Length: 71
Picture 1 (cartoon, helix red, strand yellow):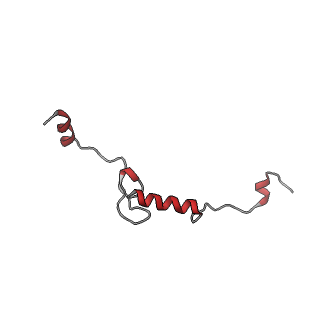
Picture 2 (cartoon, helix red, strand yellow):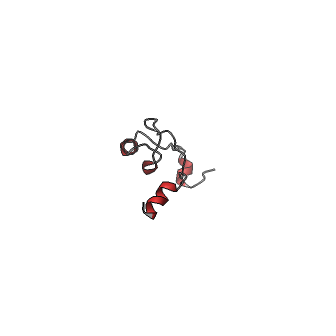
Picture 3 (cartoon, one colour):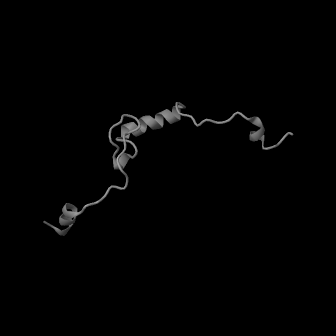
C-alpha cells in the first residue's frame, strides 16, 4: 500500500455541509450538486427560474420606484 492510499484509508474527513433533502425530489443532497441530489434536479430548478415559474415578489408602489416624494 502506498503512502497516498494509507492517507485515504485512514483519514476521517468531515463533510463541509450536512446533507439536506433535495428541494426537487427529496433525496439526500450530494456535495457536487449541493443543495440538489443530481445535475438533473439542478437543471430542473434552473429551468423553472428561467421560464418564470419562480419569481421574486416586488411591490407595485410607484412613488418609491420614482425616487421622489410627492407630499
